[in-house]
Image 1 (spheres, helix red, strand yellow):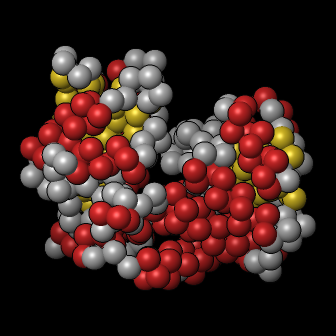
Image 2 (cartoon, one colour; image 1 turned 30 degrees about the vertical axis):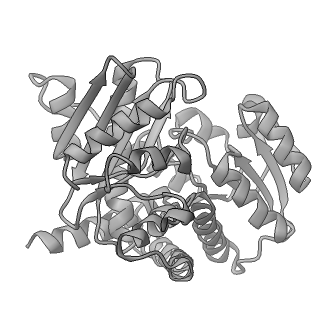
Length: 358
């Protein structure tokens, strides 16, 4: 986690300064129980677009840190994908299974609307297209709405599609062939994105292992695709070709990187590196090819972005497939310049933003 440079500043402003945020908005409504944070990182390239995550955080500092890191990642995701968008994100503190209501989502939509289009929301962990329908009743600044309403629907399949092509590009770079046939791949997290990724790699005859904290979903995906279940902390000691983190972030840390026995890390989770500098370098030193998360998981953003100018699914899929070429470009750049792949991707993303500030 990034540290505050100026110790005299409070955690909110200090972290905003360190990470380059423009705005952080705290939302509270006692009637619906809404407790939310909206973070707008950078709007140089356009309005901040990013999904809303509902999660039962242990405390408000964890929620704040999550939304700050996620929104920053969205800035770079949009930039490196060539989209005219800035980075934003929202988190709602609470249990999505028991505390989410129609009234709560509509109230959240009111807060989004007050920002006048500076922030455009979409679905994320703990959200569905139905929730976005409720938000849409209160604001036009929302994407990921159902196809029946002229939207693109659930972006998860397109996110998984992009991760799949990023994984194939990584395989091409590492082994000289992008075929995943016979490769041992562990998918950590089999929610909407993870399950769709399992589908793609199973169709290529990869040897697929799956893990998830949701045992019911894990059993369902295992039976549906013939994937083998692995549980507990042992996943980091498993011999595998590709590790695909598709749950929450920070699974690449000092402990897990030392234990990892894989050639490639390519997954959908945001902020996989607990510390970008330290753990990016550790991955590099181990000779593991790391496909930067904010690049290969950009398919969902590409998909919802297309709603702004009239949704065209085929165009979205075509643009998402280009993740393959960009991944190869970044892996090669990192090798030639002897820098981490995360740094290589960041340089390209930041340069586009800087060029638009001039």
